[in-house]
Amino acid sequence: MSTLRFTQLPLTYADSISFESAGSSFQIKFSNAERRLVVFLKDILFFSFSKGDSDEDWLDIIHVTDEYRQLTKDDLRNYLFAVENLSDLQPMHIITIHGSSGMEIICKEIEVEELSGAEKP
Image (cartoon, rainbow, N blue to C red; front, side, top):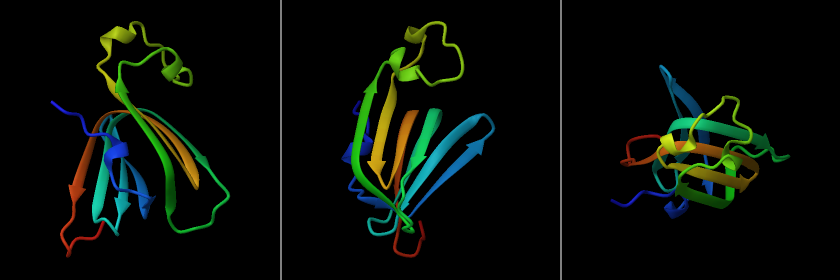
């Protein structure tokens, strides 16, 4: 089974980014009106955000990396909880986004919704 990668998406910016939770499950939602896409990064394990000096109403996405693999100790260097055995964790997406802001995200799943013309992202 093929795993969808953030780098495969035709995104050069995001109109909005929101952080949502449902109980103990967290996700990040990226919306892009031009491509009519909503991207969900689901089951977030780690998230780091740095804002650049841009005052634009959108987030430029200039460079993205997305590795889907088993985590290493280095991947969890800023994680605040102890992980006893890394091999017990399933492979995850390790995503880095550079643009008008910077983000590092470790998540289990990526889901994409294509919106119809009537729906707003």
